[in-house]
Image (cartoon, rainbow, N blue to C red; front, side, top):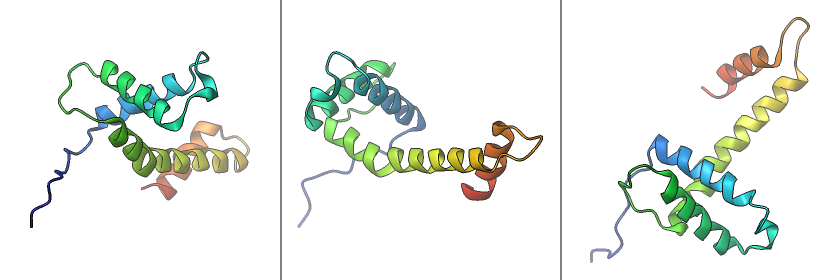
Length: 110
């Protein structure tokens, strides 16, 4: 029996960037702040995401935006943040944070 649900098109790097910008703009909106529900937040993120994109090649639902954020973008952001924090703690004499992040990223991300 065939499934009625259809897998959506893969997310592009430009969509990743648009979703990240949309999430930051909506989550830092002082008018709504922390009083918005989780679903309400993601509805607004999806709307802002669609505004940011110059051309809409793929229609993304708020559920799709939320899922992609939680499964792909947020874990990578946490990993990057962890690298930055470790690099800050390891800053060697004569080096700067940019040098340490570059060295640490090459060893731990790739």
